[in-house]
Image (cartoon, rainbow, N blue to C red; front, top):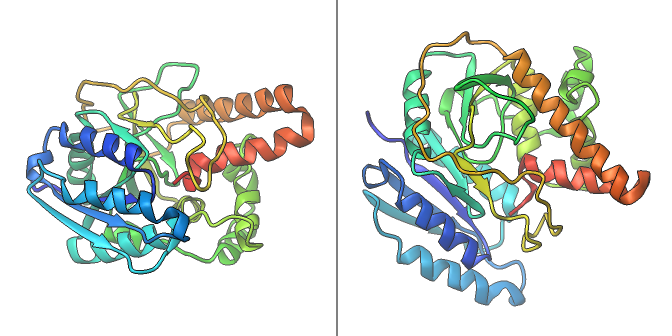
Length: 311
């Protein structure tokens, strides 16, 4: 099995970056993988020392087949950094594994990504492989599909990334034309349409909601593991786009291989319902803690984080 290149995106959190790097180094197949580290430039002089420290850690990276470091000369921001980096790498390599600097991975994350990429390479209905799964209140199968895409430790092919549409205006129109707003919002449990509209208005800069919407509109599927191979450590107030402390998304890393075997290439309805219940419970807990108006803002920030706002 030929290992896909890994793209690791980093900015100004050296401690998070170091933990993410150490976890990747311990992964099965790390030594057979090429690592591409994308370091964004400082947004302001105040960020420069932390950004410099991240670059120092990047230059010390070992344990991979090869390490390539891309140091941006001007600040791109998370969305532009990921979109440009993924597009460039997947165009030249055909497939890619994507990790951000606040994601700690299981030792079997890379194996699941690579085996999934290999197993479903010839299946056009599959858009991506995802490593994180929400801590839902119910058992999940070993692997399953959900329509759309996700953003916490994922892999894709050039054929699937070609569906990515950066225009939130076009995505909104396409979803409304086929009247899938309610389904896209998990029957009203998650504010995905609102996130797209806020991107259009300049209120957020999420690449991930556009990736999710692009795959959803194209009726593509993402493969998930039944137990999470990724843990997000960015909910500690350190992120640029996510400054609140949240533990609703916290999971225990699964430290055994996830078996990829033939399953029906269709959305798993029970898993979808468990996702919906998770989002609905999250929204309800925010209402209880903050009141209705405060909860709306808090929930959008929380669900926004799960769609790629934390970085």
